[in-house]
Structures are given as C-alpha cells and as structure tokens.
Image (cartoon, rainbow, N blue to C red; front, side):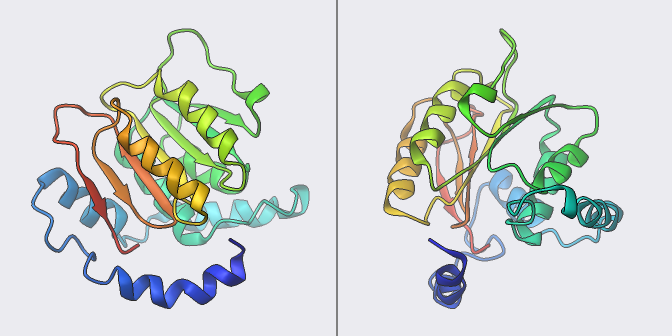
Length: 210
C-alpha cells in the first residue's frame, strides 16, 4: 500500500475503529494502562524537540527512506521503549529516523540495526527484549526475522510489527504471529501490531484506534 492510498483510506479506517478509542470497553488493567498511558499519551516529552532537531540535521546524510515514518509512529516507538525498558533493541527492516527514537527511549540499551538477514547478528543466549520489525513490502523477510527473534523472547519482550493491515500477505502473517504459542497479549493499531510475551496474562487481542 502506498502513502497516497493509505492517506485516502485514513478517514474510513478511523470511522471503522472509532469505538476502539481511548481504552473504552477494556477491562484488563494492563491493557488499559498501555492504551491510555503509552499509546494515547500526549505528554510533550522534552526529548521530542531534541530528536526532531537531530533527525533534521542528518537528513542530507541519509537516503530517501530516512523520513518515511510518521512523527506519530516515531514518538510512539520512543514511548513504548521508555515503557518497556529493554536491555536489547533489534531494529530490523527499513532503517530510518525511528532509530534515533528507539535509542533515546532507553539510553544505554544494546541497539542492533539489521536492514537484511545478514545484518542480524545476535550474540548467543542474548534475549531480544524489544523488536521493531518494519519492512512490510517483504513479508518473507519479516517472517524470518520473527522466527529467529521469537526463539529469544522472555516474559518482558515486546515486538512491534509494521504494516499489519497494509497487504493481504501482512494480514495473514500478523494472524500467524498472534497464533504462535509463544505470544501473549496483542494490540492491533492498524499501522502497527504489538506483541507481548508475558504468559502470566490471559492471551487476548485488542483493537486500538491509533
């Protein structure tokens, strides 16, 4: 799905998901907290301004993919990393300005960029605490990275999957990811899918009007 098609569909997507906004009807304290305090959080973090400045200063050094993600998604990634506090972050796919936001979410975390499978160097026995998987135009790559990283999850791991509703292939892949016996609670934000691996919580899928 290209940007123009997605932009035209936005109003209809919003209307279809209108009842899934702001945590309405969500009874799980964990899910309600994530939706209201992380997904819908609108605090103007001071780092946003610093990150935007750094992103702009690097634009002429980078390729055309540098700014392909929306500000909303980049800021959400920052908040989610800040919430999850991972020790290891794997950034797999179309490397872009979101890398700045991932690293700023927890300074000092081990950051592993991988634009392709040969770049996915994971030290033995090191768990994948946070995975941002974003190359929806290549679902085979997405599935292979998921297969490798899901074997290294712990109860605190969080996976973010881009474009889960953008193509039929990605919708099918997202369904397989949710059905994997190792995954737990999931959140469908249309543009992104979020997977948690805490098996002490009842497995359930939440739709969020992001």
